[in-house]
Image (cartoon, rainbow, N blue to C red; front, side, top):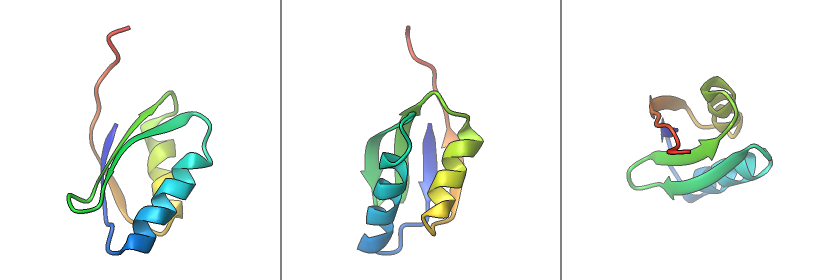
Length: 70
């Protein structure tokens, strides 16, 4: 899943990383503050991941999703 996330400062990126690290079913693949983008691999619903991101204090919108080749 790829999310557009308002990452206005270094603290925002750290908060997002901490929120996602606390969720055992979410694996952070890329955190790109310059592009305001977060890429995760997960078995959780997209809405659950969006809630985790927004609980860190940042607005988040799902940009896209892809499946696994397996």
